[in-house]
Length: 110
Image (tube, rainbow, N blue to C red; front, side, top):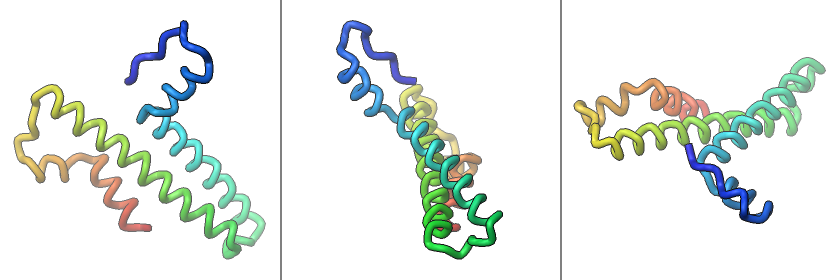
């Protein structure tokens, strides 16, 4: 987790500092996923699930989910590399990680 910016900085600079973190990207991805899932659910309930908005919401939800899984996988791999704990199996160890499997599933459904 990124350290918080110093309180002595102006609010605009603190917000810019926050927006440049991966944690903020993860948050925005989940917020987009939630909004699109609700939007698609409303389209489905009103029997309008084949409209352009419903299709856009459905695809955007998958892209947001893939982006958030990508961030999680990147942060996990980076944390392992920084700690000096290289995966024993190399590519097999990375492919065996459940977050990598979820990311592959999301990318496959796009």
